[in-house]
Image 1 (cartoon, rainbow, N blue to C red):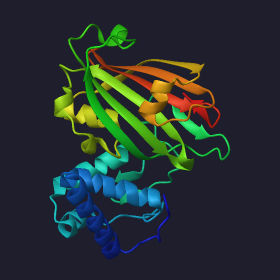
Image 2: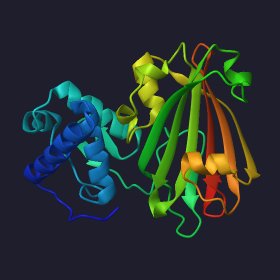
Image 3: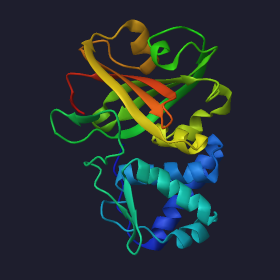
Image 4: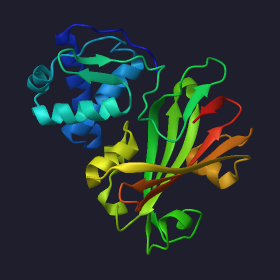
Length: 259
């Protein structure tokens, strides 16, 4: 993603965010909350909003963007879940250094081998589907009449691509109840937690090294050459019900993993 000139004044920040927000609404049919989240994430990733910058107050953002205070607070909370901003009473909202990952990034963290910098999601292509097929997820989720599949081709820093597939019991999260654009530029786990009003608990994680097959490479737009880390992770709800089963395919020759 090309870096843009940094902006600092509240007026310019509000103008830039409003323009980007309206574009997302017009192009993708997003809600104002979703569009504001995407606009903020893109502005931070592009460098338009630099680390250390303090954003306008929540009431000022709401007034200038033409949205409710609740919309601003929810969008900011979702961006904070990605570790891109920090909200603190008395100090407002500040943009964080994107090279540091917050503790709410679960399962594993990736660092580029060459630079040592933390991997960051820049964009993603999302597909939502249903399946009644059996697979390794059945051991965690049990035998369900139907499963919801959230498949993501994630584009990250240094043009690194990662494939991710989350599978849930469709009775808990029906595929038809999700829209791909509503999940863009988000921490998917926290979005689902908020949607269901639940709290998730980490389960087991495993890593293996393997070559990627043709089907997986096509699904996630990944290269066929080179070894891949295959990471499988399970998550429970706080009452110990199974929540989701997730598989990730990560190029092993380009990153190190931290658990």
